[in-house]
Length: 223
Image (tube, rainbow, N blue to C red; front, side, top):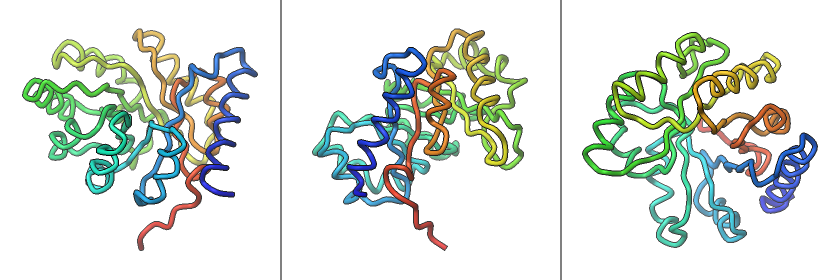
């Protein structure tokens, strides 16, 4: 299958999953994750009208998206990988949505950069629902206090939450946990679900799903 055929299949699956649980398919936004894929591979999706994309690394995104944006200025670009504080300036400049706010150092850096530039990327807090030591994200038990600090201490508007469940566990409890945290903190957007489990995430309230390999194909990671 071509990228466009896989893209159309993913869109159809999203619409079907939404309808199956009584949701409007338009309430779920597909983020096409294009990390490790060159601009030439992204071009067919842009030509087909897709505009919402996700990248894991600031540096890779800087090498790819500014030129694409010149041709397609309505692109919405999400940072879905960990943000280092020394990349905050570049991230605020490039990304429309930063999904990986996960510690006070980053919240402070974002607050300062937003004040300096007047640019206001939409912000999501990443929650480490599985408490995995190797994974970014605020721990679930600290999520409420961290969200309060983002709002009260740093003046940040947090629009959503994001999670990446452990690979070796059922995803549904993690999606349900994220939805509970969002509900009690008045947060509307949930970025959860990837190629293998986005239908389940939609059932549990996802408003954004991050689909990479099911559309782009398997990644050839550098050694």
